[in-house]
Length: 411
Image (cartoon, rainbow, N blue to C red):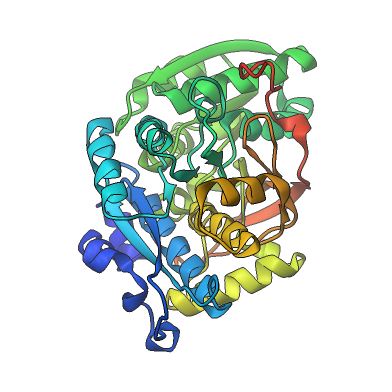
């Protein structure tokens, strides 16, 4: 786990895995005698990976979902428990681990984060008819042939994030556009989505540069970007890659000549990189905790998150870690059952507002249609200040930001 996770989290990988973070690990008021076996939610995330910081935040969110669901009485008195597994960033580990979870009697699966690992989890879950509500940035998970009757995607797709940010950024800054992207599926998908939006605005792409996952020195990549003289630079990466790239771009003076934008902006990367590096950087996120000021469900969620997690506020992926399990459990409560067919049918029928406004799953691809926010990075003085972004625009749930069903192979 990275140093950032230790500074911001105090929840170690060992602690996260201990006892699967089941209900027994929650504060005693939420442990009740049960008349029936618990509803078990498997939660595989890459705790041993470059995305460890975000994986820890996802576990915090999932713990909050279990606590809130149990507060509400469960399903016919059945409480839920969370079983966390570290599947790293290795698909073969995810395949074997998902099969082990299913053999252990898991009712539902959420988590994922990495698109490659997410696909491996989905393949096994699909084969065994277990509902998997994925929370990675991914276009492939909702397209054929990956999509199955039990496949759902609570996280936004790369197409959604890039289209929301592109709609906001291109008209203001998009004369000459450069892309710095991780050479991984999410980076390529984000670039493809942004270029698609850019075509509508007639913008010119002046550079498209890819870097390996886990890069620490971005100097040669940023030199290529700077040489193209862009007015707008998109950083299509995440976690430490995003942190180091933004820091080094600021040190190199790139912000003096171009607007920096991030399709999937990370609060943990911003906190690690510091205020000065990120100041003025814009980005898209599926959630920011200051939605509590205007959205009642965000206020309720944030309050419970703080109670479960020692006063912390959720990051965007902490919120997705909550939403993935909570959406399935909400559907199970409505269905009065954990039977996969009944829960899947309820998920496709329901409109739900569990943490940020109304959402629903589109029937053709089981993608959650959801609000998205555009953020502007604030300068803050105190390192402990977690109010690091300003919400400059909120997009309500809108299928216009999704790829068409036909483009995803739906017939």
